Image: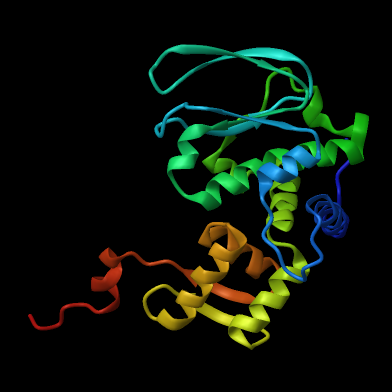
Length: 234
């Protein structure tokens, strides 16, 4: 098995972004990465199958021709014919957070990019069944999945782009904390940054933390207001 170091993943992401820039024909300093267009660039076929909101499967890919049977949103069996260039995405993601959808597609693309680099040494390609991308895989200890997550983040949020936008929005080298309620103005800028990159706020927070640009990120729902401002009248 061959594992890529963090600097190798960063370099691979930069090369891919340059390839993508040439593919879409832009010379702008900043642009938004569309993962479906990036999949097309690599000759990958993205298929949407409605597995329902309750399914814990977000997406998967295969490196060889195979048939796989799944239960769809209507509780009916559906058999998919996969080629070694197919990415399958749960269509339910299109009805939810766009950032989650984009990251899932980018994650599956990342597996194929890493395969190109690692070739026969990439253990994922020898799995007998596709590895289903699930919500809890975001924090997987499986290094193959870790590499795919890290590369996906770098593809959607390129280093140079993140640094440029962060500096333009916040004008500081680092933010110690972003609290969704207590740091309202900073949080609004942070939300705008996430929307600009087409990612979830959690994904952006992790990216900024990994780059040393952010300390603590706290997303508090309104149910947390009583914890922040407790009722002391009694």
